[in-house]
Image 1 (cartoon, one colour):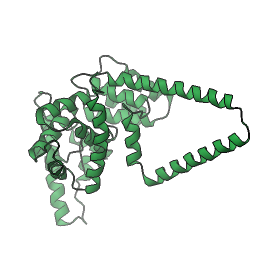
Image 2 (image 1 turned 60 degrees about the vertical axis):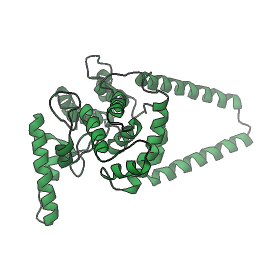
Image 3 (image 1 turned 45 degrees about the vertical axis):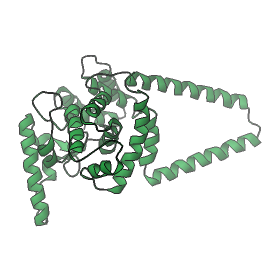
Length: 309
């Protein structure tokens, strides 16, 4: 998307389009795009969760809490992990060489001091996001869903992280194009596409959306939790009492995720029941392992009241 297209999308009311515009602006590396993101982040009249996303974009994908740095390593592609290890090893060897050459350690200490100051400033900016709590704040929504449906807030946050990188990646595929039937499609694929297309059009009509302008994942998944249209049509919930079940609305999406898992037997502290419930969401064992690992990290912050202070 160009800056002009992003501005046009931001003027609209569709949450998915506005989120895509913020993501697009974050990828445009110039002062104008950064200025637009900063103005959204500091606009008191803007919806809290839109400001929340914009602030993250301003920080160029800086995490809201320290565990995001840990989880980034968990899902990092192997090639990137290898490069990081090479860089770390190279850096260590370089420091050893410096020690043998009697480099002025006073200068090294001065640089380390400046780096520490930068880290402190980063922590202050992150802390400003942690204390921003409102009904529409994602972390507050997770807690409300936990209280209502008894589905762990940390696991809901982990799903959000795993499905859309916490709302940063809602998908760039035009959903109607995804469900276009091709000549070489098998009868099974044709039936699936027809079913999902009909469900998607029904969702758009119910919410007053133009079906030709909605984007999602490569299989037509929608919103921050990447629901397929047929699943949303069957289980979608109105989480903010506006009379509509909108898969791109965070309140509706969180409520739907929690109620869906509860319906399929989710029970806290019961590993087998949790695993079975998640299998209805995604059957991959690797998906479940990552989900559990990240939820454990997120849970540490939630237990400490990290997002409710």
